[in-house]
Length: 404
Ligand code: ASP
Ligand code: MG
Picture (cartoon, rainbow, N blue to C red):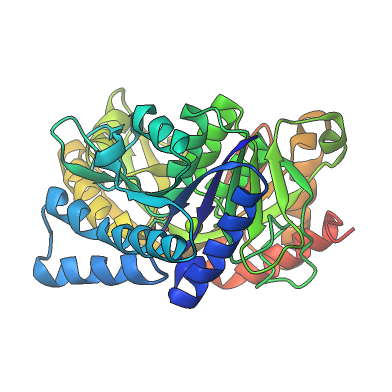
């Protein structure tokens, strides 16, 4: 008998019919002799609707109230699924994070899970119940409700799987696995049978929407195998797991893009110690993530500094950066939110040279200007004009022969 954690995303629980479909899958797993913990997201579009309401109520809603509101979508789905399972003759109980004690830090809207209490869950499993747990939410030391960031129910699922040492964590979504690139952009995209944690992490960070990056970080740390599957079909699936020799043979395993990018340039920054700290500390204090950073060679003691943030943070970032720029005597701040990041990812890059040069050559051939570059051991990212996103993805996918 195995312990299986299954997570279903918003489209899989979008209405009662689909919730019944989820119930059938849960029952199948249960009938096969497994203990099952189900983690659910809110109905598709519900979290957006709640966020929208919050912003109608107040331009800058209090973050404690905000999290308490936007976490309610999951309360709806977990109770409904439990009701359906009960109706079909299966013991099922819904749980919100405070009932289990999924503890987080106090960073509202992007809280990190600090501890999962497994006692209650084990008790319930012993009684033969299916546990249906609300994803996306946690509770801080003050007993205030927190949320884990958009897409956070993936992380809830992996956290429970890790805490309970589950045998498998299945993430059911509306696609049947992880693809070499977004099939909506390029029909030559191919499903991967397996992918390493590191590649998946880079893909998720670089914009692939299948899994929340934090869930992959956690899966890697606790070696939780994740199976990404479609809730609408029994075919396909991708296993996210430890790296092996086969995986290393491929130089590039995927091309991703991220349109959620905005570029901020601070012009004529005096080039002296402490300037970068003065610019970036306020952003960190406001939990604004900075992605790529480039500082140009200084000329006559002045330099330009360019970096990217998420588009949703750009307004707030611009204000903070402008304040800092005034303070340090920089000339001005420029914002460009019509950029995108295109990345190639692969564990094989570690042992192959010339991958970056090939990427740049391919983009150049299409007349696509590269505005920023960043690299890690297994990823190369380029910031380009947003209008070139699709083209860049397609030519890179072709050049690295990912359809094969
Ligand atoms: N419902 C939350 C969201 O829309 C969490 C999730 O879907 O994973 O972001
Ligand atoms: Mg998701």
